[in-house]
Amino acid sequence: MLSFFKDYKIFAIVFGVISVIIVAIIYNTLNVYQPLPIYQPSMVSTELVDSTIQYKKKYHKIADFSLVNQNGKTVTQKDYENKIYVADFFFTTCPTICPIMTKNMASIQKEILNDNDVMLLSHSVTPEIDTVAQLKRYAEKKGVNDSKWNLVTGDKKQIYKLARKSYLAVKDNGDGGPFDMIHTENFMLIDKKRQIRGFYDGTKPEEIKRLLKDIFHLKEEYKL
Image (cartoon, rainbow, N blue to C red; front, side):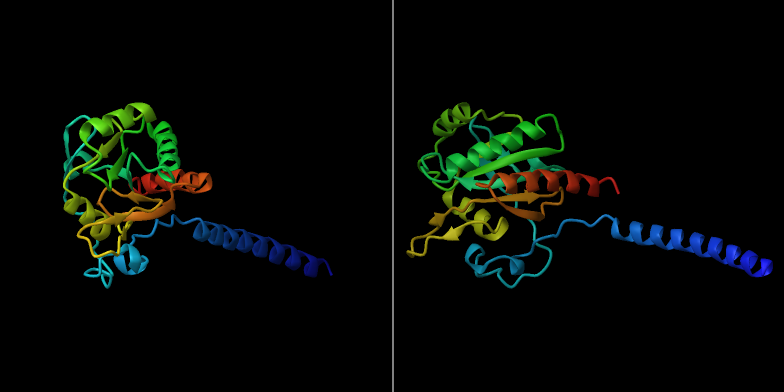
């Protein structure tokens, strides 16, 4: 009888040790870092993507660009080199969703103000209206920090192509006019390799919280 209990005690100890190891393995497996998705044109609604790339399933990146910001400075992809950034499309005279989007972008700016890895980029979809002077007035009114956030204008054809072929974020006007755009509420999270890592509704506070969380999550990717 004593031998039975002795053997049972040894079995219980061994079983307990094995159980702890199994639980630890399961815990570590479940907590392995899961990177954010890398969005390709084929993963996005066709109404937001130029027809020439709707089939594309890999290697999608933001194209080179050259635009002008609220201070009259030329801004290119070099200014965002090795940076994580949030991009959107707007126009200064928009009376509906743009004021909400700009307010929420300003709240993101506040959170990343001292983070040298993260920047913001807003493209005007009405560059013929949004001159440098107009963008400057808008930037001052909305509390834009020039070192963190560029509001850009420029050639409408280039902005259209960026919106439809790079950021996959703007609808075609549909009236047959060249390069006419209907902007959306989308914010896009772009990584250091110029890849799209997330889409967010820029009018919803809960989506802004998710975006901020994903920025932190993406930063962790570069520490691995």
